[in-house]
Image (cartoon, rainbow, N blue to C red; front, side, top):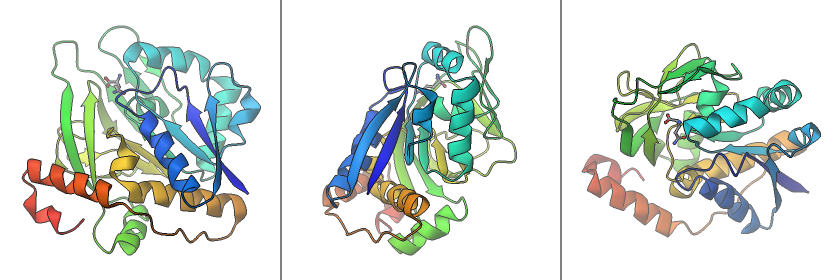
Length: 264
Ligand code: GLN
């Protein structure tokens, strides 16, 4: 029994340490003696590989790389990815990746990049003179049923701490936001939403990398992947996460969010 992590375009989409999300999933499985394999889903990959994966990780990318990815992620590959997400395969998609899962991304320069249209959202860069959205970001997960499931595990409301760096602004259609911003910009710096949640796909502007900083999300993904693949529940043993917790507390101190410190 094993879980297979599919890593989307590792050479093109892995800004701001997003590979840490892959390493985090891999290590948290290994520490519990769950066999795990990482496969690249990229330009060299045969479409059939897309169907094999149990977890998907997609990182951030610069505008130029996003264009290259979208030229490749068409036809059968796009369908295979769509099929995976629609069927409930858990995934974490950061920054440039959610932009590609939406209807389109308009870069600061050049042509609109058509997305997969899997998430009902659009992303637009307001232009090269517009300031980027950069900094530490804190948000509460509100998407249902994810928020309730995490609350049951944590015993407190799920608060995510990350780091964002994006020029594009994302506007949601009917898709549910992942959460509401407590500190930072989130999707667009205007409406207080951050990310999107669809089936078991977590879309976010939060690098961090996200999962090592918020390990409860990694465990949620592993549990879901197991249930999805083997149709049985997986009870995860608790890991020693004191360093991650201390890092989260340090960041809440730095951001002067003292009221949240007791909740993590
Ligand atoms: N190119 C996108 C933007 O600037 C995504 C950047 C990223 O993934 N970090 O909005």
